[in-house]
Image (cartoon, rainbow, N blue to C red; front, side, top):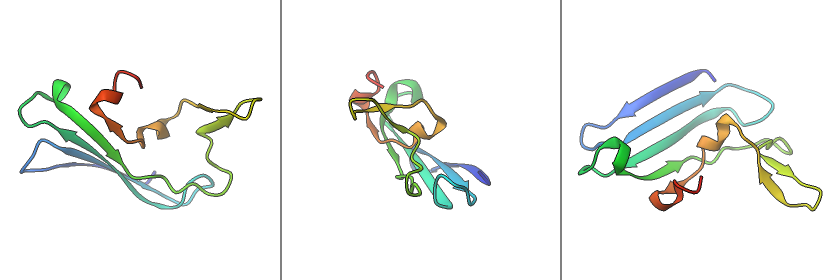
Length: 95
């Protein structure tokens, strides 16, 4: 990663995280963003409504987040890159 930036918006409580990745063997070089949408009438802890994340551009056969089981089912693999996933408020307790 070559850059990490936090963008705070003056007109809302939303926060955007910006990650810039240099050339590597897993994902395409580029800038990827995660937007945290906050209910302006709540605290940050209680007011998170949604998380919108850019989809990572994985290089062929390099998406190590998807691990196949013997029955060809895909299971989650713990990693920093799981933060690049979209969530709604109802999903938070399940993830």
